[in-house]
Image (cartoon, rainbow, N blue to C red):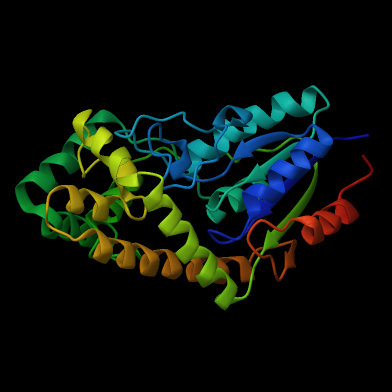
Length: 296
């Protein structure tokens, strides 16, 4: 009988990691990370990284200076899953980056490889000479219909580099029996969970983590610092922001992110949604998972 692949999805602070780890312990299935920022080494507290990351594949694999995207994730995850499938082992994908899971389980036709060094150098020159306006002018010249956040230089830069990136052939997953489930608590429960989680992160010395990253020579402009809250913590260290104000901003930003995740999940194909989960409670969704999983 073919192995199964369970994707456990849900907004941040919904309890998906606890559920995935419980299923893994009960079945021996291998955990694979599907959270973009949990792949960065040293970014532990603010990304909600589980306490034993060694249990996961595709976690703690990147330096904070490295850029990463869905195309590379799909290729690396497919390699891991092929190895597991060939060994007859079940797998569990868990993480909040919905695009990674959808691209992997539903196919992704718009995947490209990295742009060559010459293209990167051209974009570097445009950015250093003209800033965001220079990048936008070039994008408008070459691809005026591109939809992108025009206030975000990282995304404008990425859109330009994609124009020169080689198109990669689609990647076929091995023939797992795929089950996708999402934990989606009510808005009020999730807001409460998020507030609790952010305050717990503060108590676990998130500020110290950012200080260590700063002392190690990393810069606020490094890709990993796009994770929610790290810029605010950096400003606290610099004396530009009060810790209480930073906490409030992070709670607000996390709630906004969770709202976008809930919107994303409403359009996720072949997904079973579990509507409620309180902090630390897994019994009800666990029963639903085992009801839907293929015979073990």
